[in-house]
Length: 110
Image (cartoon, rainbow, N blue to C red):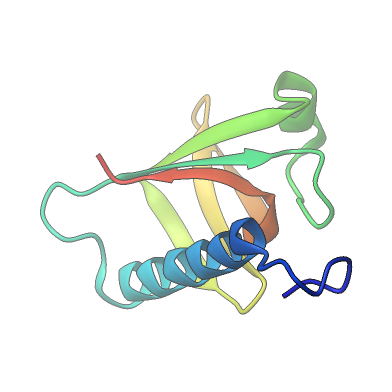
């Protein structure tokens, strides 16, 4: 139920919370064991969201939304309660990304 309307169940908000938990669980497993088989993930996030920390030049290049691929070349994946951190290469240069789960708009495992 929501505080705005006690007669309504906030399914959308509950689904987003559940999905963030699912993403955290999957990333935790990947951080501990690596990616199984040929799995890879596309993670799209709002670069304007609170807590997103990426290099200024990446933010200039992706001012609203960014999609990253977690597959073969990623380093130092750290999974925390409210966010994950990862190092990926962009144009051959390693970059540290700090992404809150709340900023994620899409998570796809093709």
